[in-house]
Amino acid sequence: MNSTSRPVFGNYIAVAIVVLTLADVLVTAGRDAFAEPPEKPNVIIIYTDDQGTLDANCYGSKDLITPHIDRLAKQGVRFTQMYAPSAICSASRAGLMTGRFPPRAGVPGNCSSSHGVAGMPHNEVTIADMLKGAGYATGHIGKWHLGYTPETIPGGQGFDYSFGHMGGCIDNYSHFFYWVGPNRHDLWRNGKEIWKDGRFFPDLMAEECEEFLEEHRDKPFFLYWANNVPHYPLQGTEKWRAKYKGLPAPRRMYNAFLSTLDERIGRVVAKVDELGIRDRTLVIFQSDHGHSTETRTFGGGGNAGPYRGAKGCLFEGGIRIPSIVSMPGTIPQGEVRDQMVTGCDWLPTIADFCGAKPPKRKLDGKDIRPLILSADVPSPHKTFYWQLGPQWAVREGDWKLLGNPKDNSHKAELTARDKLFLCNLAQDITEMKNLNAENPEVVERLKKLQEQYVADIAEK
Image 1 (cartoon, rainbow, N blue to C red):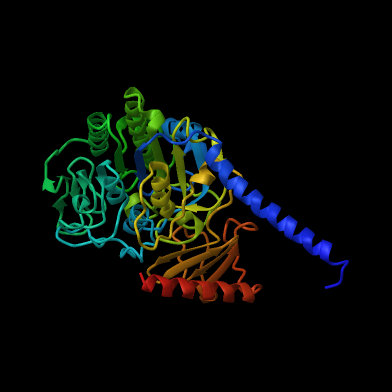
Image 2: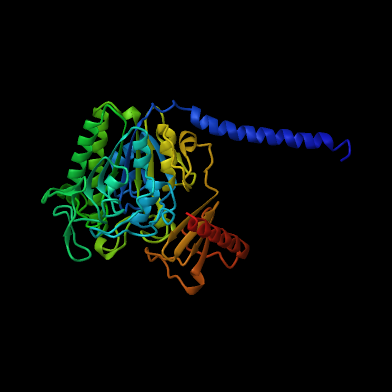
């Protein structure tokens, strides 16, 4: 190196130091821009079932009334690129509860709705296990769908208290599972069957939430309110059926049920306000995956807007979901985050907010607390992976490669050429054009990345 080149090299080092320092500043700013969370804040996860990508007024739906979901968005941060861990119910819940890819957590698809059949392995560490170890009271209310044995129902997976159904869905008045015979009753409290026939299940859930909040108002708690709404059967109240009677089917049935849920969400959040604990309660609202187009839900009703796909497939409409996080005084209010985040991220993020120790095992989720606190913090995910039966998808930046894709929105036919389907989400969020022929090097790179993920998951 000659003498004239040394100052230039020194300048490169100086620039690199500045860039690295700036990155540290952004992360630090994300943590310091707002107050530190209260010691051991309460945590409420409101998990909805089959709610479409844009199905809230704050997400752009013009024919839907959701003032209480919208209020959470005004009181917190709303995500536009939140991805479900999977496009099916049980797998999504496993990813949320463990912070791990669902196949790594032992739940690659749906668990059985039959009593006596195991689900997510008992040795998986859930958010409830983690927070219980940090001194929290833990409660599950609503849908479970992660196992139906003593070891795999909520009481075996870290929850002190549980009320709800263990299978995939129930009729909201009889509380029977009717969809795969034989028909069977499915309503339980702490592992014991109970009977509330004739009572509307969303009202029962709201009552149980209010009682749990009242009982634990003076000590830290974790409440996992796993709604069965707007999953079929679409049984909205008469008030909302009348409100939407002018809409075509199946949108009017879907909207009536979702607004029915929104009303109950308002009721439970109002209870948090009434108890004076809102500023020390982290509220996370999120759907498990995209809307259903199954016959049992009249063939649709949900709104994915421009996004292709729905429940059960890995196009954006199946996995890009509404999601909001709120804790006034600690988290910004009325802000939006466009960075890519995932349902697996909540376990490490909750650990950070609550000062709890994450499980000592491989996690696929990342702590997104800095990103929540500052819009300038980048996504912690350079890549991410989904696997559902023969379908898989891998994302790297704006590139997304799908293997063996399905399109349950039926927006276009998929041919043999589409067995590998490449899209660039920055150029085309609709995923309607397969770019694999024009970008063979990208396809090859993402295929290798998918193979690495498969091998890594096999190691658990």
